[in-house]
Length: 75
Image (cartoon, rainbow, N blue to C red; front, side, top):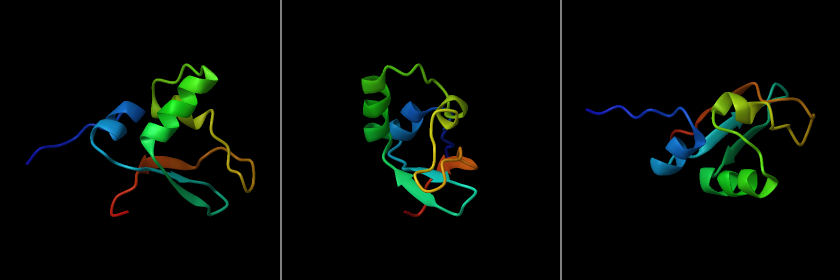
């Protein structure tokens, strides 16, 4: 059995995992890492980690930062 490291957005894209973003307001969004990487490059953001990504994302409903970012398993 192998284990996969999911430390960056590139890891999610390489292993074909969706990124699950949970907000404190209860909103859950499943994001495609390829689309997110394209948006990051288009904006010129210097984001290399999931923590750095969390500092850039905001909920469309309430405007807060994500409570949790992780793999979207079973989706």
